[in-house]
Length: 413
Ligand SMILES: Nc1ncnc2c1ncn2[C@@H]1O[C@H](COP(=O)(O)OP(=O)(O)OP(=O)(O)O)[C@@H](O)[C@H]1O
Image 1: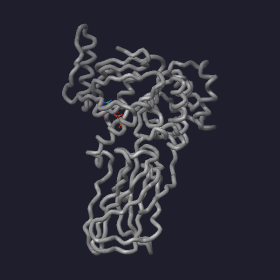
Image 2 (image 1 turned 180 degrees about the vertical axis):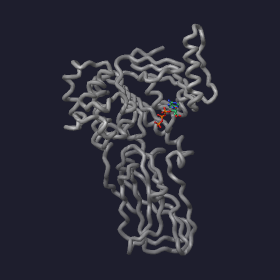
Image 3 (image 1 turned 120 degrees about the vertical axis):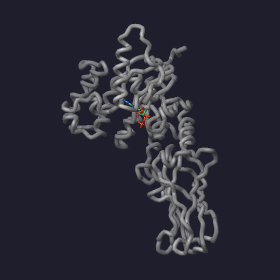
Image 4 (image 1 turned 180 degrees about the horizontal axis):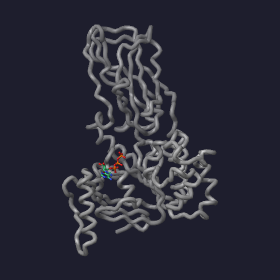
């Protein structure tokens, strides 16, 4: 049964694709012929070279709710949004949508490169069923939101991808859709635009709008969405709160993490006079199973040393995927000596000043006098990984969500 407050109801939705172009064309012709033949049944199962891009997916989205679609590359996220937006037809199952849909899928689609940004606003609105007379009073607000200034009167073919994203989002957002579908649009925008979109999504939701967001940025999903669906090879693998869904996704990704993220495996060096010490591991542990923003965190560096190595200091770095440094833990004030064998060094961060998301880690042991490194861990070629889960008090604080650089209070043991 369909929930009365549901604006999107999806039942047993399936979509298959064919991995071979020629076979796919042949199947297409046969399907058209079968459709034209009265009483002919469509081919429901998979034929040779076909695979399910989406298989038997069911969920509902209610008014005022935001749903994050989470999954690895090729999991079926964009296929789902294209089906919801009517760009492609399902092979089985049903979709019920109430009200007008605003969609940001395949950014360039629906824009005429020869027309200016301003002219494209009218064209895109027309595609969404909104006429010129209705758009005119909204025009100043749309142009203001794009932040494009004089560039709005430039042909769209000269726009950067970020400028296209600004234009597309501004139009979709200002036409008061009942359901907004957003596929990775934030990824191409700059930080300022991302912040603006997140603010907009929050006020749109507060005003009763409904949103489905596809993103590879956990902190965007955390900031905006209450619920998350995890897709694995086109199937629903998990459904829960955004935090639960992200935790599920990251914990199930770990097995293939090195290949899935493109992070190479770290090599273990052999101890020798030329390499008297190496860092075996760097671990951050909080009070719970998932480290959260604001947690007191214990940092443990495990090293192996061939012989005593005097006069060293150590430190670690946390940085985000785009390379900006989030934490540079200053080296401790006084030098220490590494003892031979396998040992640990620890320090404590009173309150982890990182927002929910994924980070990379590096650590170093350096000579105190000349600051030359004695041992490095997880450097550029193979950094470590840190996942920070959501702390409820931080979720709504967009400013903090988007903070880039923080200072950190460290107690060196
Ligand atoms: N038109 C198409 N023809 C054939 N295969 C397709 C087509 N569109 C998508 N696929 C396949 O369907 C699967 C799901 O693709 P989809 O784009 O939905 O993944 P996604 O989860 O959005 O991935 P990403 O995170 O990389 O954007 C992939 O294996 C993809 O190659």
